[in-house]
Image (tube, rainbow, N blue to C red; front, side, top):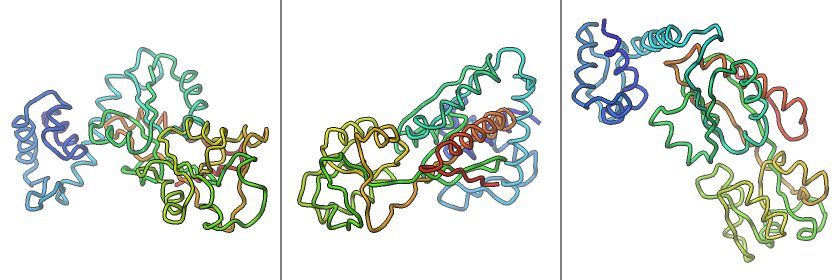
Length: 303
């Protein structure tokens, strides 16, 4: 069996188009098709269900994908080594900015101590921006907001961030039980429509007569809050210092906003053994952070 045939099949399952696989493997689209057909011929059954409009696997294809993951993982382990010695190929991690502001520094520090010879690249952006990395499989781990996992791997977890309405103390007088109508009387700082938190502020749009601002950067949004430009529904942990010093305050409302969930939504299963080591570090780092910040975030093991 030619491992290149297995590799083409695996990446077709991940990327779902021959063009993307061709770009990934630096071969032509006909070569991708030929390799997948050759694997099907060797197995004796079709792996791709070509009767459907979109990409889909046959029952045998699902079984073959699991075996392909194991084969490519073994190949990676053989080429890289798994005992922590020697130069290792780099690991690429994509994470929403909230994760980077909370438990990700613990993870990166632990990676540096456990795998000093492994370069670790971090890509931080919004869910919408990071989504473009998913189809290219150009990352090894992705931690996204409100996104279900796309793989089966051990030690998956979820961090629940408590979302609260936040404002400058001079903008909203202290009180209890504010309604949506009460909130709509104040200027609002929105996340973009692509954000999982937009519905909370977007709900005020039809009610609001005050100014409406927006920002796709959490840092900029927090700066706008500190300047008294509006109110916003954000994870309270992101302004923990400002709440403690009184620069910002939590607005007490009749209903508490839902939590924002962040979890590992993607792992490169072709490097499963290697990636699992880093996911273990992420698991311990996130759990430790949540234990030290119980007011604003909760750690939930998905096992």
